[in-house]
Image (cartoon, rainbow, N blue to C red; front, side, top):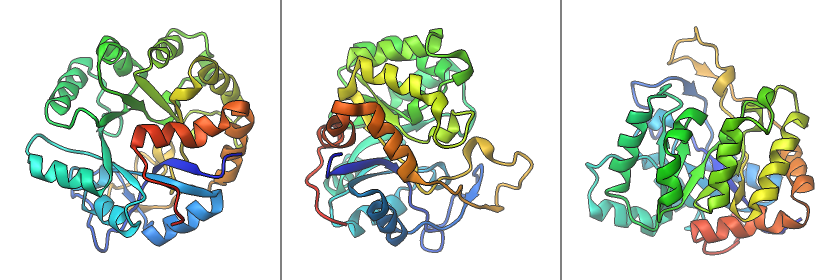
Length: 287
């Protein structure tokens, strides 16, 4: 196992200092930078990527504060609108931001035309060296296929691409995702297995999906935990959006072990090298 694991997908929630946006789908509990440090120590990660969650909308202050607290060794993925200035983007880059997130799943946006429009708008003003992180359905990913395949930019797909495990790895949607992965323009995060698996950990029904990803492009895979594990697809649909929900109880070490076994000789790439290259990570200092 690599000694410089990168957890490429975590969130920080500090509503006392950084209130959530009024219009949101859910209300998570508190997960501070100190809590994050405990998590990183637990999984043995010396690198981390903070991802802007939907409850903060386009206000990235909580994430940027966390990057500062982590002494410049962390990286971040923000959510932006074209109202942001070039000076603000430059400042974010200096703080460690290396990507912008297009999150269409939380608001259940499945219109391909909307996705294409939002992607084009985002690409028009973010730095060319930043990647675009996609949290989208397989149908939306399909609509973006040609754009991603022919782009000079890198893209990152959240949470394994949220495959429908009941359809298996030969489904059209999964094979289309593998084709994008093969192109080299798409990275896939091995994160949040519970959002796709129909079983409890270990997520045996995801093994064929892990194997197929590793067979195609192990150099385009990233490992992530999705700490601190909001409810996601298990959320109570009738719950009020301002009702604080409990985090899932997840043993991240089990997912780490499952991915390590699957990766085999590619483990160093999946857990360290790919993230270092994509995120331009400065080092592996302790948090």
